[in-house]
Image 1 (tube, rainbow, N blue to C red):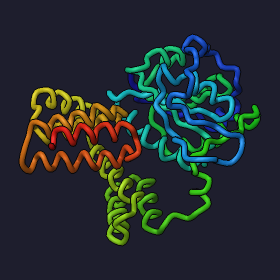
Image 2: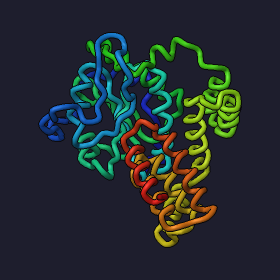
Image 3: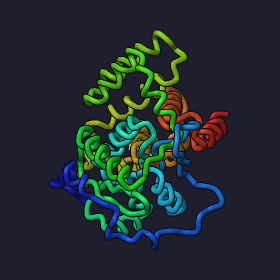
Length: 321
């Protein structure tokens, strides 16, 4: 599916939306698990701990996310790893949502893994963004959108949410972060990212690390912008060709690392990690070390506390030792 001529709905149109959606989500619901599976906890007051602002929407946690929408808007992005445009939009949405102090959650739904959701939302193009409030869908836009357009739509979405009594927030700590100004070099990096200048952002983060080598946020930020920089000019056709080459050339480090980057950007975290670990297990010398270093960088992109990172570290140790 594609959306070459699609545009976001206007903020004015978004402000006219209500909760009487034409889509019935009940068919997708499953009995709720004993504990939420990937859905962040919401609260009616101030944040009470660290919770993710982006989750991956799956059949297992979908009901949790629908239930969460009674307390906080849940913005579903229906996307596919086959679409570089969709992967780019996912990165943009993650960055924009971070600025809303936990007042909205981003749920990334891979339509290849969860096709039922695309059918329920009557999706005609990928990527498509649909919010859910009180269990009802609110169509937002399909195709690409600028950060400014996304913010305008989320602003209107929050007004609709407030009018319907959906005013909760999640404990992401974003309110505290918003209250404190960023360190100058971090702000410079953020501004560069907003402008799409990933090289300048990387320079700012490197300078921050030179001044403070233990700056974990700068280290993670550098890994993220370097990843975005590597993928920035890769077209969808080139990405598909890289995947074909990767299948044919398992020991071509450049190709394998590029496909690992694509997997990370597309949310296929374990596939990316396993690809590089397998390469390390088959190879020796400088290429083995280069792959190991890249894997550690991708750990920073995903987050060192992520369970998939912990599992991959064990796999790396096995092939190294």
